[in-house]
Length: 100
Image 1 (cartoon, helix red, strand yellow):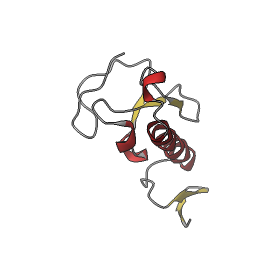
Image 2 (cartoon, rainbow, N blue to C red):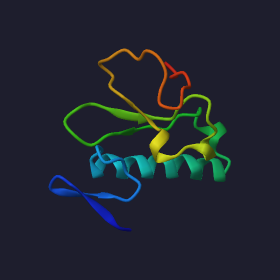
Image 3 (cartoon, rainbow, N blue to C red):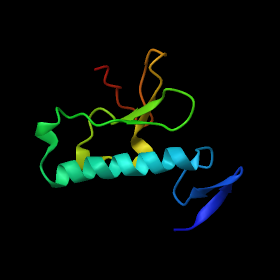
Image 4 (cartoon, rainbow, N blue to C red):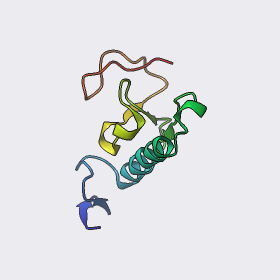
């Protein structure tokens, strides 16, 4: 895997330029977890919930976008949530955000 410069660290290929490498790594891992859950047929056993905390001083976490199957989830489509801020509107794919 090649990398690009990001401040004092490196951004893996495919990561947005304005995203910390640590957040991208968590996004890739969480997307892979969703796809593994789908592959092994476990989605009914998890009440359709997986999430991950974004590294850093904020209490942000990542959730899956509403309306996508687990096997469709990618690192770039995961939704970053700040629990201290009400969610309004739609995420990047234009789908509603699930408030549950």
